[in-house]
Image (cartoon, rainbow, N blue to C red; front, top):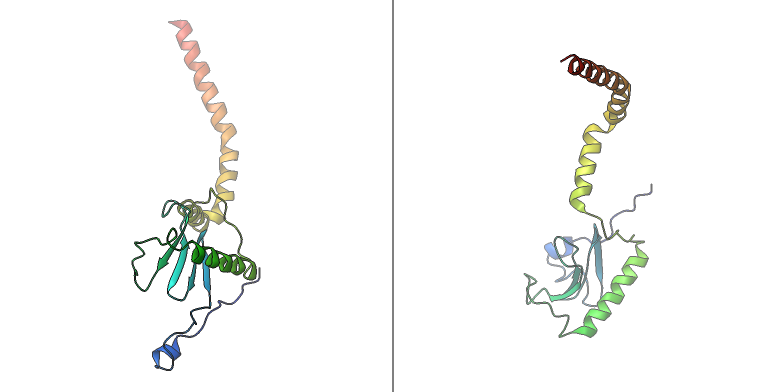
Length: 155
């Protein structure tokens, strides 16, 4: 598996006071994490949050005026939303972003990953032990039933 380096720009020019912004207003910055998606462009951000965090719809926010992202501007600025969605689609192509299945659950996947990490090497051993002991359990329970059946007949 090839791991690509993270893309982005250094924030050092901002901290040293050389520049006021790292990206220009017309430069899109996209990301995707577990099916949640966003694109920043100037003072605006589009975001899609999947369930259970969101409803799976794209939202548009002016993050300078509304840093808490409380007012969705999609209805008031449909052209800006569409332009930014076009930039997000280009981001998806350029970065080979893979679509996440609709049934994907980050909580379920985290639980599976945790179990696999903790018990992974021992799962095969546990399954083999259970398969080895299963015939003995079947014989034991069948003998127990047959004894119980004989004692019922004698009563």
